[in-house]
Image (cartoon, rainbow over all chains, first blue to last red; front, top):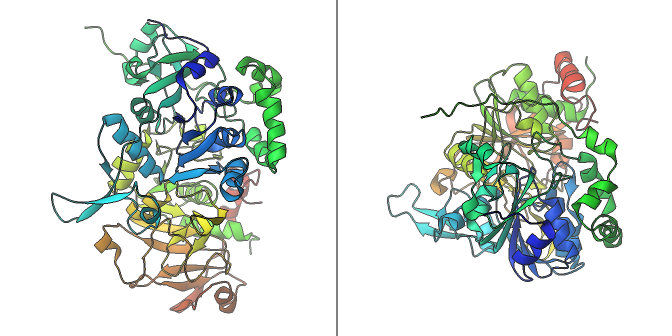
Length: 305
Length: 252
């Protein structure tokens, strides 16, 4: 059965104020269109979960959507710091922000525990660091099988209320092909209660079934499917378009004050109805610059048996 | 003599720390340039792994972040982060990790989390990312940072990435692998003695030992034979300026 809808509908039926939500993608395939729709619909008191808050959460924090962030590296990748995130933490502007902080592996392990319905997962991280002192979600358990090590840090499961993940292509039921960097998206999709899947293009089920190893997110975990070309801009989609690095650099300048950040939101988020209007506002030249040359993988032969 | 900048010297010096059969977890900026330089000179088989899960990347141009698409195209493999951190890093399959930070203390403990109190920070920094697990699980780490009093305090405000802890508790007792091997700054190269305390190993050309001490927030130990750091040669400078970073993104 088709789960296809548009982003406005998917967001309003999946998300409620006060929930914990995860927007996916490690630099790659970040669902910016979904983030902008969440801002437009005026959500508040959200707990935002992501390894790297990136520009997407900086924008949502500046818009006043968030009361808490669960994260492991809060910077503007390759550029510097996230000014709105810092303003919220350091000065409480526009709202106070609680933080729940881990290392990358700590956060990814929490999602993996959530995906598998485990009470906790052990990991060889945090020993000798100051994180356990400041985060009750990092505990130590005795090793029941030996003394190397005698005890080991554990983290509890993390099950976001809603995850928004992207892939390059999916069928209408929500089985998605992803390639390139996948980060922690699959763990998050399996951990979340409700999943919105957004893709660059919808394809026939036969395309998905022709290469099942590439189906990293299956329809089993997906509730809503949205087709949104360029839905990750200014992040990228491997093979479709490059990261718009100029936008990441510009964000650093545009966010110097809360007021200048609000102006950006006014122009690029509140000032447009949806992703199509956002794309129409961008110059054509910009899209052309982001087009990669093709580099096809050799097709695999699954065999007919 | 070849002209070079402080940054270029840090890149060439860091490249020399890498061996041909190393697998290294690369960060963007100087580590990335150092690894690519090593690969194009003395370590052609160097395997570059990135936090984003790309294994043995072969970037066609300078990546602008650790999740850049050029790290994915033509990689040997791409794995989910849970596998990159679990099956590769935690399992001991990464030889060398590169780390930077806002503060480094005499035992090589690094802070990249907050300046001031954690609950009420003066400056909020990005946080660990993969740094904590890189510091805990690689076989050796190389720390690259500018050299100032502020960056080398007696004690860090927050331990993001453990080095040799307090010089008494051993890493082995805590179940930590490896440890900091070298600290490369714009003034000098430091290493660590058997107790895990930093000592001055070499000073860069034109820098005095006093200047290094002045930029360090504690009484720095001097090695028994402090030498001059080997400056970059012509081939290295040519590769950095014309092939690795022709636009001067990280070296200007």
